[in-house]
Image (cartoon, rainbow, N blue to C red; front, top):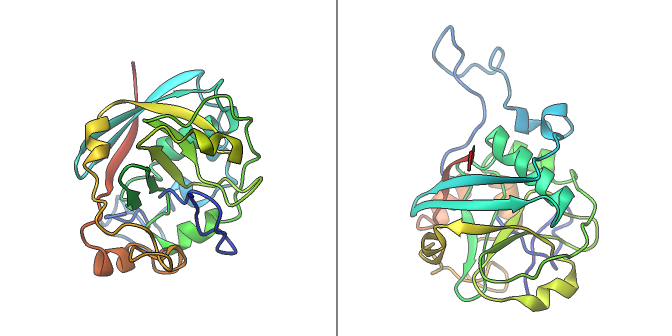
Length: 232
């Protein structure tokens, strides 16, 4: 059963998940990060107008990962609220550096917890309402994780198999992998289930310590180098 650790470390959800953290950026004047003058990335403010744009009816996003490129095609009519959230996360650069922290071969690959704990904390209560389930969780489809009704934030999963049993649990696919499913199949799954049920990363610790924890304890995890919107 999929799950993820939410604000209260929820458990019944797919916590889908950051080799590089997108925190403070170098200032144009000095060429280095400056905590006073450097602008925060737009994704650091979930409530900002830039994170609430309506997505196109259909669009594609390319995820350049440590194993190769993956292209996800999104259909807004499948799950409008999920599509909008995904669109804004991609266009803002939120996913850059995010790790695939829970990969279970034959089931799903999970990602979406930001590598900067401050950013992760800002998103923990930035939920969106549920979308009706209009598509099946078949191989290659992409859905948001939940910790129960009304708890979707930033965590996603890509289905490795036909996980139709998830349909009745409220997991609503909003897109599907149209290129690079072979890359998804190659994501490192050796750590297995997350703690405390398995020896993989503990989601509460990821939230608290970010990539520093993952790099130290789980160095073989694959990650998103960059995610961008692409024209079809």
